[in-house]
Image (spheres, rainbow, N blue to C red):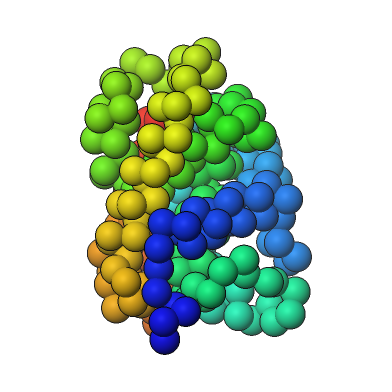
Length: 207
């Protein structure tokens, strides 16, 4: 079971994989861009579209087994439980879609980092504050672009450490404490409360 143990390096590779694939799309699933444009087309304001997307994710999020079900199509970059990989993908795609709805460039490294910060849910504000970024007034597009590269590295490291800590060394055992989502994901579905927290966090961060 050693290969299943998590590390900051494994989490980092998994985050990058999930982010890239959320932008490009996995066979059978919309990309973050497609999902964002779909919801924007159905509502008369960005806020309404974002709220609708979050509600949809709360009830329609993919099951934790969808990666495994795709068989050989999906090759994970590291030895990590498929349910954890699934959660990362589903949550990151939602956050990226919200960021795109707000007009951010998903190919920008700073924006990518802020997507990962949102993945920590209620811990996001604390992570940014420790890095010298005040939540609530520093998330305009111009402000995100001005964050120095060294600060971005510190934020990325902090996010990785926090996710490893919350997942625990065995990953599956402590999954209920992660990002925050319920342990029920092991049985199939992403918890609505956790998804809602992460969605609301993304709406604030990319306001």
